Length: 219
Image (cartoon, rainbow, N blue to C red; front, side):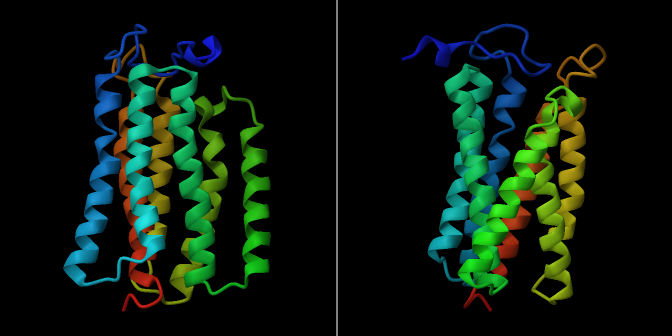
């Protein structure tokens, strides 16, 4: 493997050495994503909701986010960083496309245009200096679009109309904790990144639940 891919990365307050178990709390709190996936499967089984291919994909992707982030917070190098961010990116794109097409009812051309706008907005946020808010501005595009979809979700009278706006509120809190992690290192030795994991597990549960409950044939 390319040596550059195994270069150690230290981005979080809890990590004080390059060892595998140097971030136990950050690593273990990734269980929130796996638990969120299990909760969605139980929801579909309990309510007799059709386990469509898109619903299964979003659910499985949540578990992959937890696994990828666990790898990053244990091995902490460049290749595991890709394992961390790639499932997150896939989930964002998949949720946007599936919601816009299957719940919003947009034509494929409009879905493509929406994806293009999302990519441009996300790239714009990603080009901002990484030291601003500890790199959390990279998720600015996701926050803006969940808020926009949440407003539509409520206005259109979808099932559980406030669920995505609740996800936005929790996402703002999770981004705040992610941003404060290194800044609070001197007074909080564990940092606050683990709260980002716990709250984001809930955010993804809520967004996936919104899709599952409103997908075609769900009622």
